[in-house]
Structure formats: structure tokens, C-alpha cells
Amino acid sequence: MFTHVMIGSNDLEQAKGFYDATFVALGGDPGVMDARGRLIYAHEGGRLMITKPIDGNPATAANGGTIGIVAASRDHVLAWHMAGTKHGGTAIESPPAERPNRSFVAYLRDPDGNKLTARTLPTK
Image (cartoon, rainbow, N blue to C red; front, side, top):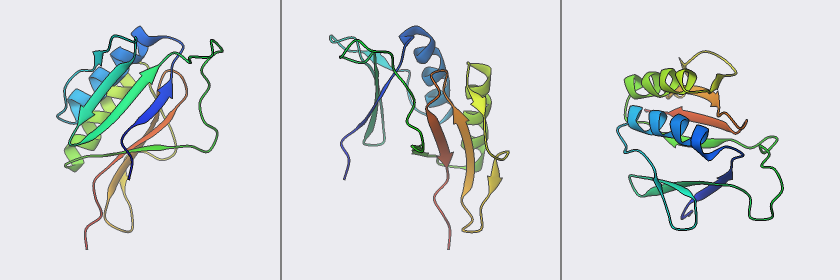
């Protein structure tokens, strides 16, 4: 359904450190900066893009919004969470844990306050 998710950042260098670490923890590659100054992360057909807002106003986090990232395993979720907290992210909600649907989930806020989750797909 979606081609990409775009979020804003007030500090692209800090965002790159955070997202490079978390995407590598999931088995992805560090991001690349495109000609328009946007960070782009591509993994398994999805793209996450980070940019300074084009209207010149400060970036703000979506209140109530969460970006979900699929992880291949529980170990990937834990590595993502650890990498994120070591690179300016903040652990939020509960500690990484299994949910009733048997998915394994962790939550972070990135350095700009955007809410993210990494999770394994539910099992039957």
C-alpha cells in the first residue's frame, strides 16, 4: 500500500547516526543522502526517508503516530532496541516483550521524538 514513509528531523547528522545503527541492527544498510538532502533507508521493499521540513519550520513528532518496522527475529528486535538507545533514542512504553499474538515488540523514540516500533510478525 505504501511506497515510503517520510519524517522530519531538525538534525540530519544525529538522525543518520540513530537510523544507521538501528537499520544495521535489523540486517539493513546505512542510509544514503540523496541529491535533495534527504536520508533514505531501503530494506526489503520499503523505504524510510528523513528530511528537514521543506517549509523551513522545525520538525515535530506526530502525536499518536507510530512507524512500525518488521524484524526477522526476536534477536533483531533486541539489537534494534539496543542500537537505538545507544545512538540517541529513548526506550518507551514497556521493555521489549512478546505480545499475546506472539509477535515480539520494542518501542523507541528517535532523537527528534518520532515514535518507532520494531516487531516480529505474529505467529499462529
